[in-house]
Length: 111
Image 1 (tube, rainbow, N blue to C red):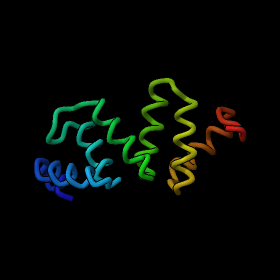
Image 2 (cartoon, rainbow, N blue to C red):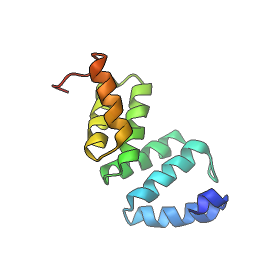
Image 3 (cartoon, one colour):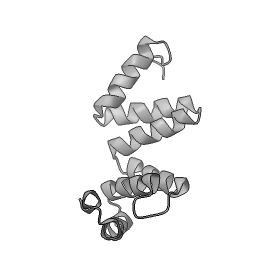
């Protein structure tokens, strides 16, 4: 991954092209670039846009990150829905968070 080598402009160009073709991982990587400000100006709107695109395309980690974003903004029902989808995609951390939430009484089987 070019981003890991610090070549953010090349990574941004590559991932932007691939994202336009619908590549979920590229959308996820672009969301991280906008989150961290790596090679681009930090932009929460663009970060969320790319997270949503990646999540819709089936990227489990993007779905998990959307859950964290929603939960951090007090939208717990939406966060749980994202966690359930991510867990169904096989994301272990989402499964563990749902188990803990169920044990703590924050999530029910109806969710």
